Image (cartoon, rainbow, N blue to C red):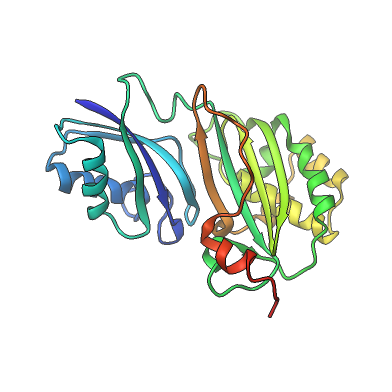
Length: 269
């Protein structure tokens, strides 16, 4: 068996998340089908760095593949891409040490959320259009309340696979880029719906419906309120998975998927 590290991008719109499911179409499921077709074997292992929810995208999901083959990594990438639908693409395949594990070796992950200030015909699947005026300064101020080791039970649903709702959020960044508001959250790991509920709550701060004190209260004490403001999955991207020696700091930029249609076209219809 040879072990490979695989870097994957995907548009999650048509899928019920990353993780393999019996009665639903998933990203991992599509790649597993492609692996079977390419290698014509069932004796392989393919595991991702973590789950993404239904409708959520990835710019750089990481997985590892164990399979018996003499094919070179670049040949595997090209041939496996030929077996995959157009909305899933392998960016890189490289040989990995036997002890590399896509999930267990990850030290941090970052998610990017894109809010659009205007209606867009082309970026709808990749951004959340908010009609109301948003105070980004207030949103940014409130976003910093999430930084640190916090019990974020108000910002998730019960998940049998998660034993704790405590998460170390290492950094939250916000910036405006043309008609986009970009928000990045980097942390040790992420629990179900966490980023979408953080974004939805911050949007209410931007609208003037919540104050920073309200957000602080949601963090301090369990509340059902954030669940009512869960942001749609369309604007969320798994941006990057970090491993030891990776550079954590990186520029916060819009994805190319909406950059052409939103950032460069400044007029509002």
